[in-house]
Image (cartoon, rainbow, N blue to C red; front, side, top):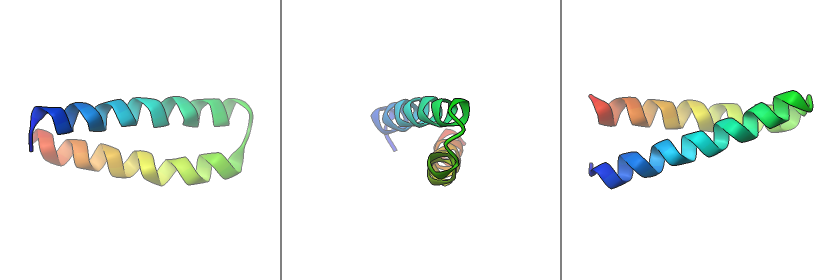
Length: 51
């Protein structure tokens, strides 16, 4: 994969992480449950690409 793909995934991870933290701050469990798996998937994809 290209560096552009990796940069895009890292950017998405940053955005979703901020959204998750905001949901956590406001105790919005519905959003937290929705965002958690997305964040995990992005982290896994980034980990695979960086190997």
